[in-house]
Length: 187
Image 1 (tube, rainbow, N blue to C red):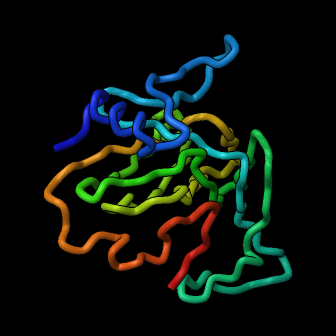
Image 2 (image 1 turned 45 degrees about the vertical axis):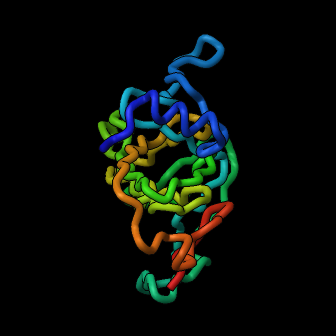
């Protein structure tokens, strides 16, 4: 079963998601924004103002290896706006902290405002009993630099409830359990 707004609000109000916005926010201080908060069948999460932009120095050549990722390939950036270079990506993090119930898994989909500008968002599943801040991968598929905005919506999480698994993410001590910031690939 997919959770509706009533169920998401109940969960959010009891600390399952912090901070939690029970309504869809589309304007702040009379300015249009990329929306966030509770929708009919999902929750639109926001970006924090912390980014890791992929930027390999010109004097370095190499291969990106997920088994041995070199953090020197990333440049730290903090701010209300982040510029992603053409055909590149950045890592970011959610403003929200999740405490997933043992019988619920979350799946993320990108927001149409960004998708229609060639910006693709990837977030791995929020497994049953996982908790933490989401690390978000944002790709610029265009030949031009693009802007992404902190404190605005970036993706929608859909929550699917089922029978509780015999072994949850927390039970197997998953390597990303309890993450607090942008977390690079772990093996």
